[in-house]
Image 1 (spheres, helix red, strand yellow):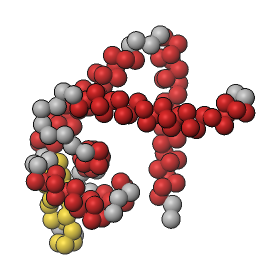
Image 2 (image 1 turned 30 degrees about the horizontal axis):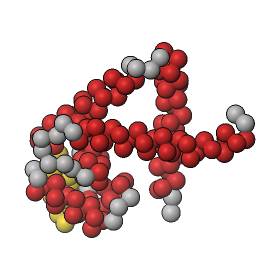
Image 3 (image 1 turned 45 degrees about the vertical axis):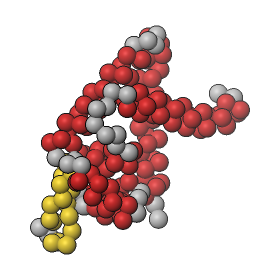
Length: 154
């Protein structure tokens, strides 16, 4: 890779990833019958899915949001029937978050629809392009980890 390509890579990569995510999000909105969830609401639901029982303050740290912002999201999602707040037995003042069956169903539907959408478009690529995407996954995962770790630094 020549120096100009190396210099342009971070911007091109960021633009491409954001563009892909935006198109996926817009395409998946089209088939919704339920009211649309905002990005931060979906992120919180996905976090609670992977870390059941997470507290509000830990969720705020994980999502890089203010505690009161996450509290607002929790209230909205609880009212919509997607989250349940349970009292933390170790600290009666703290709440632990759990998904409802409705949230699990909605996330499962979203994940299935997203996988089907991406699979349709990956199948349009030739074999070499699919292999290139597959080969790039470890580097992309490592990039995600290092970005996450840097965000956690004080």
